[in-house]
Image (tube, rainbow, N blue to C red):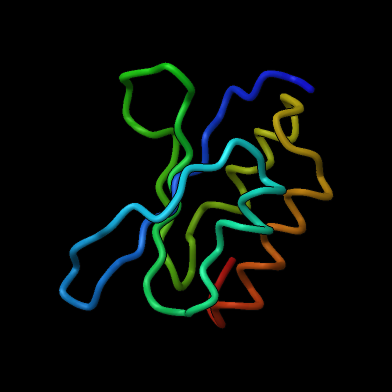
Length: 101
């Protein structure tokens, strides 16, 4: 199994704008299967580099997750995720959020 260079962080965004971390995942598969909430309330998804104190590589918020589809193409180019995983994540987000990517 390859060493994961990216972590996927999910946060629940409450109505008052406050957030609560709800999970950290090391693969797109785990994010899809375990990390996406069953509710359709606010979700913020961040991609961070492992062992780094830098800002997140990307932060995407429901319902539209603007820029995520395009940004994920870069991670398929570096083999961090497969095209099937990219498509699966985007499809899962679309299924939960009408305005998703």
